Length: 367
Image (cartoon, rainbow, N blue to C red; front, top):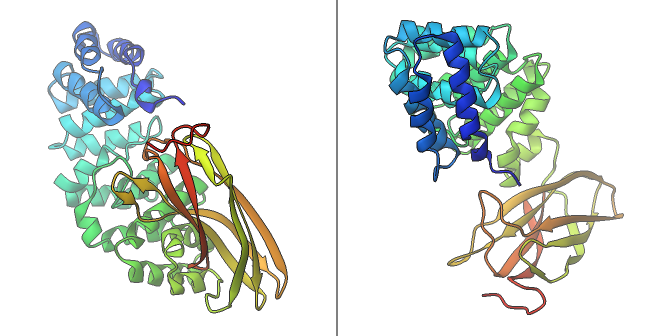
């Protein structure tokens, strides 16, 4: 699987240098490329982004007005497409933080090429009132990328981005922005609103539940946003969240025949989880499974995975299955040893089983 950091490669640096040089005859392309390329090795994605931004800070015009003209000329010439725009966004956050009157409109111009959701966060911290005023205006921008930036850029817990501690403590200022976007015509924007709501739910579940009920009653697109925005609370088995989405945690549901096969797998291999559910009364069921991964110091807290949403008929058996692979991913290293898998329905764990993960399934070694 390709590593995202490889997108910010020496070849991309050279392309970026060429595009800026076409926009400004005075730009020292050689100095920029030398500085940027020599610092890439050994850095991950976000560190590479910041390093290339540093190289731009060293070689772009020092006056924000002049730098703004260069970047806009590169945009007008068709440059700064895709990943090439990512470090330019970071450069704007470095070089124009004291000039939000220039930096914020430039981020709005850049974000259709590559999202400026990371770059706007320093402006929120350092230039709060000015940035919030721009975000309120951008909720009505004709470009969906700019409207999405309003929601995504102000998320309290944006993955890979700096946390906005002020919004973690008090998210009410961003709810005003989300209120303006919840009925947005663009699914791209509404999905961001849902992710933002889900961020807030991790710290302020009651506020999110009140918002969800209000949106469900007063908006035309709120059902989608609420359904996706409550997913963390659903995984936690929050009774009111389940009720809002039409689940009844009080209906008894029985599980039988839970198996995880094979019971021993090597790292990188998969198990098939299979079980039977039977409800005492017809009900809608949110069916998840929980994996307690083995860590360096024992089993970790469970990671919840969505399996299915089913309408269970009264008294009838429903068989479900899902494959789960125990492979390394960027955010999780698999350790040998026992891993516990549990089935959770409407927020309640009904049963569990243990899978042994080993380095080599032929030898059965777990160390």
